[in-house]
Image 1 (cartoon, rainbow, N blue to C red):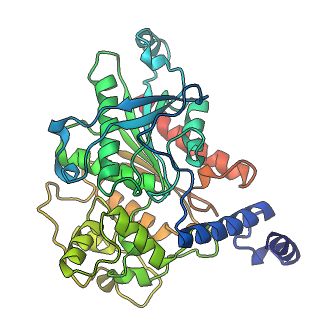
Image 2: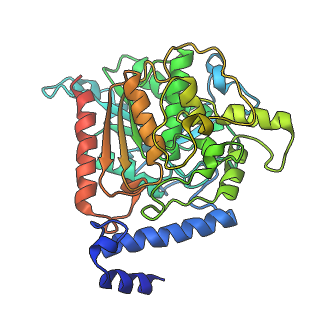
Image 3: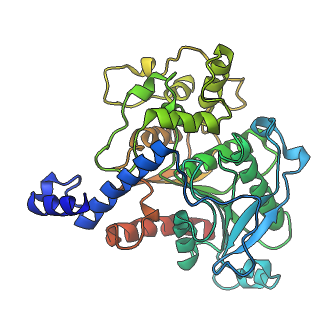
Amino acid sequence: MVPYWAIYFTLVPKKCRPRESWSMRQIINVKFTRRIYKVTEVAGVTWGTRDPQKEPPVGSLKETRFEWAEPLPEPLRTGILASGVPFTRVGCFIWPKDSLLEMETYKDVEEGDSGDIPVIGIFMHGGAYCHMSAHESARTSRIPRRLIKDQMVSEVYSVEYRLLQHAPFPAAIQDAATVYARVVERYRNRAVGRRKIVLIGDSSGGNLVLALARWLRDEGTLPMPDGLLLLSPSCDVSHALPENIAVYVPRPNAETDYLTDTPDHRELLQRTFLGFNPSCVDQEERRRLLAIAHSEYVSPCSPRVLQEWSHSYPDHGSDATPQELASDPTSPSRPLAKFKKLFENFPRTLLVVGDAERLVTEVKCLQQAMEKDGVDIRTEWVEDAVHDVLIIADGWWDARVIKKTWQVIEEWIAGFQKA
């Protein structure tokens, strides 16, 4: 198909391209990747994963160092984390390999003439909770690599959280909380000078960042992070479940993104992620599934959650009303909330999203809900960009667009260093 695409899009006017600004390499990249994604999704193939309980071979890491975070202490195992899923030690890849922050002499450096406050990033990789890893060789590691290369942050902890193949929800949140607690203990609870902590996540990693921030806010057992950097975050897992009428409303930008919609296979993934037997038809099981899928921790921007918290759901391009989209065969109840607003007390946030990607509807919901709830949020809509554009290999996307996006991120992070 690649030769056909090359010939076809060379002959037709630019206005006939998926996006008029796209080069031939961008067109081929999106179309080829979309075909690969659809095949692997239907076949149930995962890629780029590793065993989260194994250390990388000695001497194999060039850019990072590997550390274990011991299981989350008992007093912190509260709220959504208190489930039948066992707590384990969690591995993390720390950028850069040699860090000044581990040296006691760095306290004198940070209090020098510049006055800059070190920023620590905690990174949750994307991959739909079933692909990729935190290893430095993973595609998503382009993000922490660039953050360190351009000295936007002093350190990044990339969390090797358990994917759905290893443990169901809330294992990923447990693991994220475990590493967060370790970083807080290491830098905030010791007299080593000032530090700022920013949670960073792309795609499903952004979903995990939102869940971790919510648990930290709801439980109050650990201090909140100073900021959230959300890169094309997934905000509505419930969209994949046939019990939700919204699944029958196709996501937009089918021709301009590499993400695919294969409802049956997405349903299998999400049921497995949430810890349910995909073939079970028991009504009580279904009720519990919907209750979890429409939890604020899993789908903070599902139509049901937004409606329950008095937020609007924007035009979705179908004849169904927002009320119909928010309705389900069962009615999972939400426990009495500790806060009056969905995103109340959430920290300063930068939301980066491509305007050509398939998640634009739910990400717009996230933006509007955060703004309404008083979050200090900045949103960067990357022009003509696909999902998670910052992980695309060099040469396969417009370098000017990538550079501009990173400049926005650098400017936003710089605000913490002078605070």
